Amino acid sequence: MRRGISKLSAVFMLAAVVALQACSPVGIAQVEAISLMASDKTVVDHLVSYGSGKDCSIVRTEQGREYCVEDEKQITQNIFCYRNLGGVTCYDRPDPYRNGAARVDQNEHNRPN
Image (cartoon, rainbow, N blue to C red; front, top):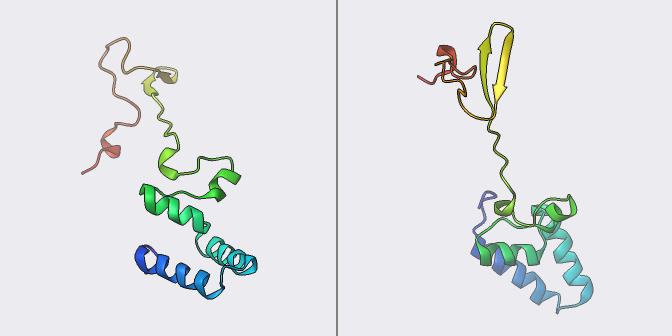
């Protein structure tokens, strides 16, 4: 895990805190609050993330995003821009006139070494 605690030890720590509180509503609320402040996830979010192998959080749902990071849509733009006499013209497909023009983002100084 990125915080230096393994998933298994985090689950055991949460289970121990819940067991020590004797399942009182106040104890569970405290565990939920600590978990939410420390990792932006509730205890249920941790269980869902562990079970599904995804990074899930109710906080993202409150922000209008997907519950799990992996379920968010990846937007890819298909824009191909070429230089012309007046400036730059962009199309939705590569080189529609097949004139061999170089794309604006593929100049010599933009290519990796």
